[in-house]
Image (cartoon, rainbow, N blue to C red; front, side, top):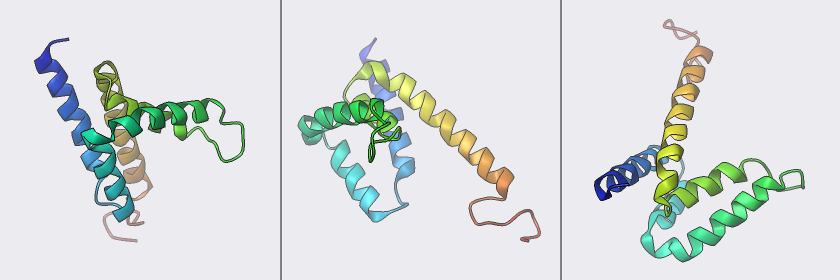
Length: 115
């Protein structure tokens, strides 16, 4: 993979993470910390632990939610995963947007008249 392609995929992944910002202050602080290059020593083991926790999701407290979060964290450091992870993230965001639109949007309205 060329260096230009790696940079493009890294920027694309960071844009997808930026979309998650602004929803909750704690999430914003966590995303700031996790995207910092100095957090790599914590990010990699955390990613592997989340993936392992997702694999054994049949146990209490652990769940399937841990698996995609671990893969997302791993994609921050492994260029090979950036393309597939951003592709899936974009796809899921679009599907969620369509689903919310069909349900009446995030504000709970069911149409143009606001009822």
